[in-house]
Length: 559
Ligand code: HEM
Image (cartoon, rainbow, N blue to C red; front, side, top):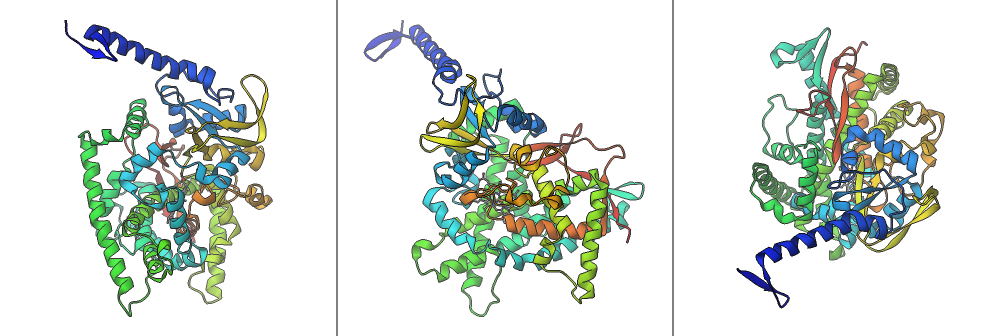
């Protein structure tokens, strides 16, 4: 009988297989049963049971249609919940304000994004600000703060407005020529997938304002743009089935699996190659312009970063070429669908609450009329953001349907996370701080935080823009939130750097569309829309899940 010598002992293959089986069984028993029950320092933190040994509670966390369940767990167990991930790993799902202040602000750099997630996404985003950590991140963020300041973002208002007008014109063309454009008509409305149209508009805008590139997504010729197609391939959303969750986990844990040849992998690589080539061209163009004399100063974000490089007195305070190139990809990925989906959900809420839509239209028209009376064709950015009801509608929608429902972090060191309100441990004792070990996974629970009754009152589960007019809620949470008191843009040094950009862009497009059009749910009795999360939260119609869409009825609004 053949075999091998292992640690000085000769073992037959049969003995070896038995040994391998026993080691695997011990390994699984330890991680699936013994570690969670006896060794994990967060074993006393309460949370829901999971009967799924493979992926624990992950399906409940990733399937956005189960968001109500998540919210109710935060109300039932407290604002720090322990849950199970793959193979018995544990993660904390946190919506406690003091704990989040600690993780996102005070010790932000001690809670980076999990290394597996970073490795996985490095393939797309490389050295872009979204996935770099530590000093590299601090330097990039310092340099980017200028271009993302309100003073600079305001200068994009005319571009936002001209594109909002372009979008409105395209919709008017569909209303006027439904047969020619193959648009569905229902009564005196047309039916369009508003999320697709908003996606075109925000892609154009991030291209123009982000790096001076025109994706031409609102042009009448509907030309195919290779870079836009590459992004569509990279952003193709999956269905969060159990099989997909397991595959994603295996690939993030074992990045070499990305090399296994599959059709999806090949499409992905092709799209990546296209992005690299086009990204480099864009960067070279912007650099040439920045260096050439006499050219009108370019306003886009990347040109501003190049200019900062040229004028920097300290060479350590500059961005390298590969970082600038990855900024093109990062801005497009971080700042395109997030904005269009925010607008999509706002319009959906306005369909569910027609009285809110009417009130908003009245406010917008009155302000526009006033600006015209004063001899101004368009209003400026500050004036637009000061409209109280529009502000309330945007805040309430961003609270109610955040573009991102949770984000992930990992403890870099052993630590103790403080809680603002004690929770009852599994042993019945009160817990006011959570000890975590290096490597502990954490989920920043954006949606449950936004639904918190402690902050927004007993009716926090209701969509009600008026709450923002009745009380100054913005002072309720301080410190770690960028757009207080909602967590939609996160906060602290790793919070959304583009939140002012997004807010202005959303306000300009929303005010233009609501002034001109009336929106209603596609179906008279209501359309069964649900959320589907893949980093961002997209809408889909129940029963028509083969694609993500937000079909709405649209017609010209009465004058
Ligand atoms: C309504 C629209 C938007 C939402 C809801 C949103 C949300 C977020 C969130 C939650 C994060 C934190 C992600 C994490 O750390 O896990 C983030 C980061 C970021 N966002 Fe946004 N975002 C929006 C629009 C934009 C826009 C328009 C831009 C660019 C023009 C942008 C650029 C970024 C960047 C660069 C980061 C990384 C910041 C860092 O790590 O320092 N975002 N965003």
